[in-house]
Amino acid sequence: MVGSSDITDREWDISGKNIEDIMEALQVADQLSTDNVLQTLKLLKVKILNNKMATSLCQKVTDTIVDYLRTMGGDERTMPKCVYVAICGKENGEGQLKLPAPLTVLKALVISVRKHLDLGTKEDEIMDITQEAASLKAYLTLRLLFNRWSLKSNNKVTEQALVITGHLFFLMPPSKLKNQVNRLTRWLMTLISAKVAPFYISQCICQLTEALALSGYGGINLESQLENIIGMLLEQLSETVKDSDSLSVQNHSLALRSFYNLIQLYNDQVISLIRKNMQASDPAKIVSALQVFMHVFQEVPQTEQLQSELMHSVIIMIQEDLKPVQKALLNFIEMLGQHDYLALPQGNFIINYVIRLSKSDCSNEEDIQILCSKILQMVSLPKLITLACQPSNTLSFVLLSKTATKMALRARSQGQVPYLSSFHLSPTQFISPQKLLTHLVVLSVKPYREGEFGVSSLRLLYALHPITSLHPIINSSVGQLWMKKIPQMLQILDDHTEKNLNQEEWEDRLLQFSSQSLVAIDDDSWLEQLIKVVLERINYFSDDEEKSGSSVLAFVRFQLPYSGSGKNNFYFTGEWMRIDKDICEKYQVTKTAHCPYSQMEKHNLEDSES
Image 1 (cartoon, helix red, strand yellow):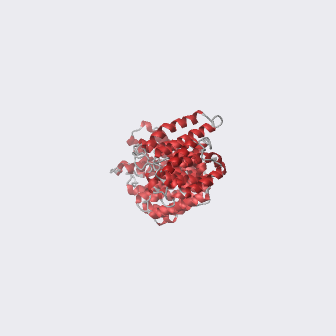
Image 2: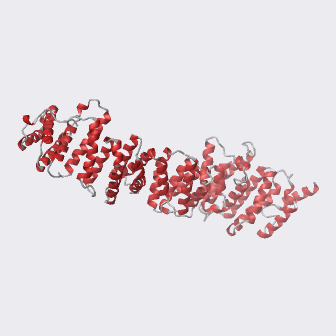
Image 3: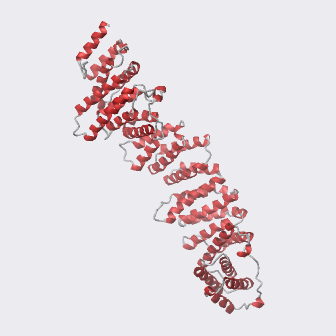
């Protein structure tokens, strides 16, 4: 602020009467020009600076100024002058003034000065203040707030003091602000204990961190208080967000922005502290830490060390498996999946966790199921299908197969037909086409199991046709067959229920479909692998599968020798005959089961003649 005015005591009577006259003039300020108002305020400023006033008179001055600001609003010339006069009156009083009025004035001052400085006005005389003077006054005002008033209670006065303090951060010299960080932190922690509204705490911390980030260096004090500050922010984030309460929504946003500011200053330290809270025992802290990491993730360099540490933290959270954390953790995993984290070595552990949550017999919320589906769509199609066909994932089969079907159909719509050549090229990594075909056909025997087993299996087959292909033109007859037959079978299931479907007719239709598929494949080497899969699957049937599955696979087993080119003699070796006898005895099937005797006799006769 500039110094004393050209008006002296000799030109102005210092009695209370003259001050009252000035206040009366301000009460009719709408009848005065801006220059007259400014002249009146300058006279009052000189009066206050040069003389000691009674507390009652100081309070009257402040109240008059506040009423003037409320009525007239003030402009860039009168606003700071009004505020300065009120502050001078407060500081010059013999006693302590009521708090609300000075706070109202202070709030108007800091906002007005910030606007002035942000505009970059070169003519400091317009507001009768220079940047250096404003900076010094802001620092002194902050000390005044701490030294003259007890701001440790949950009330409107404390809330407004926090608002003012936050604006002062941007006016103070950075070096002075850094020196106040310890004191500010202790004050804020006290206010949290006093249950001050979270919005005002978060806003103050956000303004503090933003002001320090703008200076380019947080200082030693801020670094030493990081754990306390982050703890306070996480506590504010744990507050329930009420859409109908604007302050509640803003509180959440401001707390997250504070972390963004801190990341700019202390990336490694902040990340370490967030990860520490991700492994806390308090579910609320874990959820808040996950939200924070999602917010700042783009600002964090993606190093191998960070990837390893994050995956380790996620695995710990999965092992703890706290139900209140599940949704937030899935959101976090979804974000990691978007950045290829699921392809890392630890990714399988996380994928298995998602599958476990998605099991159809769990009473999970619908949004949990949706999140699981989104995450699973980030897994490669061959890997997802392999997981769907694993016996341990039977309860998740419907969701996994639906997800795989959606991915396959989307790929087809984009001209990327999923011929699954990677299944052939990596037989030890992914399920083989023979195992996949066998698994899906067996699951289709009881189409309404778990609600949609049969429908899901057939739709996946339809989306993957032709399942045997290494190239679009190979075994195209299989694809043509499936394009025709599978929709017909799906329509039958849509038109019936488990109660009115004729199970025997359905199995006959499924057997016919299997037979036609094997004939269409016409590839002895492929079929030889299939028979091995069939025999293996029969040997490992569970009790509930035996009755329905044995008839299908036994039929497939008898059909195989009459499929293909007939040049492969694997089916008639001693090994084949020995396995054949064991299977027939186990499931009490004959060589005429689902297979005309005449066809077998004809085939045996032709074989003996050759």
